[in-house]
Amino acid sequence: TDPRFILKPQSASVKSFELSPSQLGASALPAASVGTIFGSPGSGKTSALVARFLHLVSNGISPAEI
Image 1 (cartoon, helix red, strand yellow):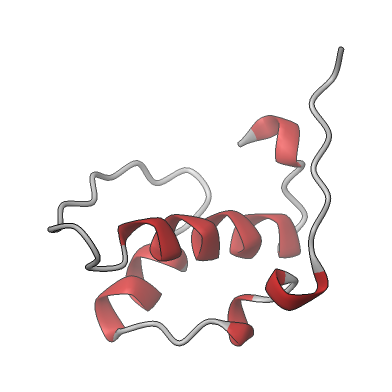
Image 2 (cartoon, rainbow, N blue to C red):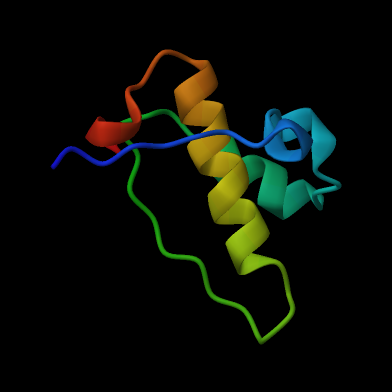
């Protein structure tokens, strides 16, 4: 089956996240960029990745392409 992604209202926008400057930088990289995120537990790695996903989807990238 095809994967299905449903945005929850509380996470529907990158603007709803309180991100640090480095997290914002990682989330706003061009779609073709590849990178590695390092950090200790609780440092916000997952939040940065979720923000990246939402940023890409809001810019027209299909979730299936990510």
